[in-house]
Length: 358
Image (cartoon, rainbow, N blue to C red):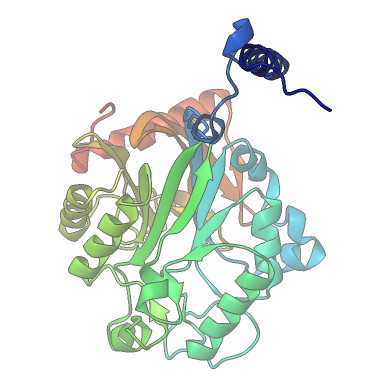
């Protein structure tokens, strides 16, 4: 018959088996480390440290006249050598002052602009990452033209702001993360032909543009953008043509948008340069002038690239690279010419109440 082990022997055998199990798993019996718990294994990865972001801005762009020939010849080089200044930035933006497509009826106004869908390839080829279409030419070919513009932008995977199938889309920001910083860009226009304001302004169920004339609506959009981003950029179409000093309504709107949380406010429309500098610690550039534009001579040919360095909502550096239009494209100035042009641009702050530093 089989004999059962004595009680003491059974206890000894149990202890040996327990010790062996602990030894094989690195448990407490041999002083090894315990296996990490599930909570420790799934602990969140530390958030990457944000780094400064450079944002380059150019002014008004269309592809009319001789620029249409450049676009047809080679969209990737249509904007000329200034593209190198745009590509060096982490993010680049311009004002696309034209409808894009082939359909629609021209609006009842003096000048109407319409470019083929290759315009978006030209922007991408030049290093532009986003464009505002909120301006007094964004709906030159009506709602059909607006639909074509949005369709072309989507097909080219090119972000546009300030325009949409309804107000929610038109006022929505373009959101992008660069160098672990969240950037929000909002576009709107303060300039619309009086007889077209109603037809061109986006509504809750109506295609159109984001209107800066509706200040409370724009303020709401900027505040909403601020809840999603570290830096909020507002690109505006505003000012008076050929006027180098900002209008009272420009300065008033800049104040309201800064209160709403805008960190950078830039824009154009005047076709001449206006001042850029700091207002209450935020950066404001009232007028970037023409950029890729077929009609430019004298003051209207003065152009340039504004490059801002931002970190956590603060502009830590602002650089203005002067250029002059030749054949509709901006050519960067160098040495003495650049120095003189930069000094002339700096002098514009005298009527704009902007500071050189924060």
